Length: 101
Image 1: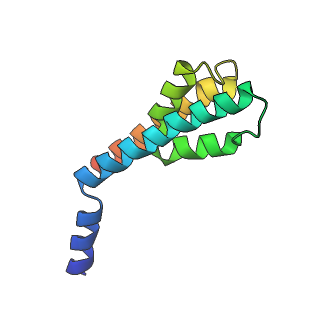
Image 2: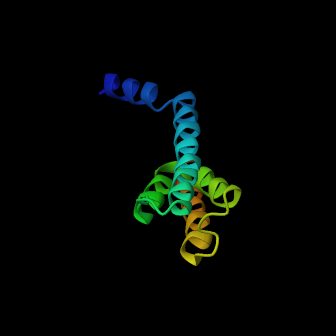
Image 3: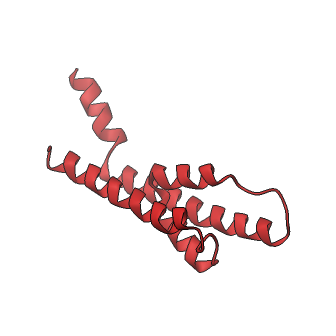
C-alpha cells in the first residue's frame, strides 16, 4: 500500500499538476482560436461540448482568455457564465481536497 501512495504522490506532484494545468490552458486558448478561425471562414467547427470538456478538465482560464482575446462566443450566455462557473466549482473542489472538508 505504501508503494501505491508513493507512486500516487510522484504522479500527482505539485510540479506535474502545474505542468498539466499550463498545457490544458494553452490547449483551451488554442481551441478558441481555431474555432474562431473556422467560424470566420465557414468551415467545420469544434463542438461546444468539446470546449466545455476542455474547460472542465482544467482549461477554464485558457478558454476564457481565448474567448475574450478572439471575441469568440462572448455573446453566448452559456459560455460567458459557464466557463467561470466551471472555474469556481473547480476552486471549491480543490479547497475541499486541500482542507479535507
